[in-house]
Image (cartoon, rainbow over all chains, first blue to last red; front, top):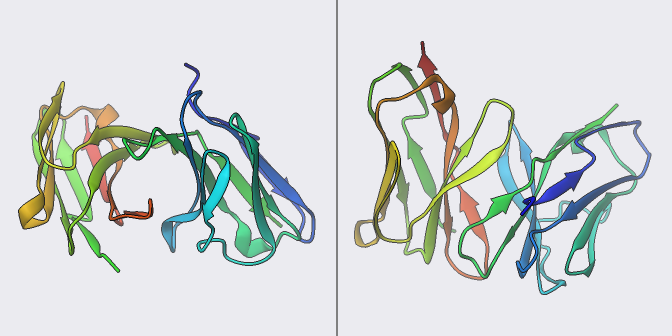
Length: 112
Length: 108
């Protein structure tokens, strides 16, 4: 198995632009999680899905953030419009039930 | 909400030394995981260990759920063990809370 695949690995964008991060979970995993990691706040859960359905998005910081999971093999996290304070590493993770996460390699987002 | 505290916050070891990392949590948990974030930023699942003891090579972990702590043992440390070790607990509703991590540097 190729593991959890995230793209792009790095993204540099200008303030105000739309940013879309992508994630392909491990086949057969029924939970998908989006995390954000910063030096100040550590790892924060933004949203998670169960069988493609968003279950808890209370960690999404603002309405500028949205996430979708149109099918079992693909999810996106979108920021529109982006701001410099959104700069962070965004991780996607998947799991079977809650029996251990597997994380993707992350997307390092820089908003200038 | 539940509090997760890891100690020590920073640790420097000479290659070959052993170490113990600790994770305390303030309430009952349904599961607990240990992760290693390497210097390249990759987060690697080490153990899923809601209770008991597990071993994987030079690493082992013990969780005593009734006393609300978990320990991660690293034996014969290597430079490749450097990075940040996170403890993460899940209390229900599938919200996992991460500790602040222990930053480990192993000197050659």
